[in-house]
Image (cartoon, rainbow, N blue to C red; front, side):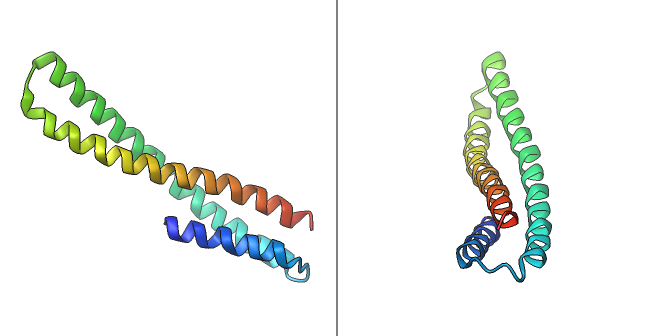
Length: 109
């Protein structure tokens, strides 16, 4: 999805740079549809990221309370996976906000 988001951002930047207004309304509908898809993807990744964070915290609590060192590999795996999810969510969030700005700029053309 990251590649798709970056492609849509590049398309919107190119459309804005070209300054053509004859297909503006059609392109705005296209961009709005993609923004909706990206918003959905962003929400799903937020939920998954929150669950991974919750599971990592619960695993950490279990390790501290029970003192079982056998749960440490699970915690390491959860934290590494959480790091990748946070990075991906960060990119989705920032590029979605940037697409909102590009959409507004194209609308004002």
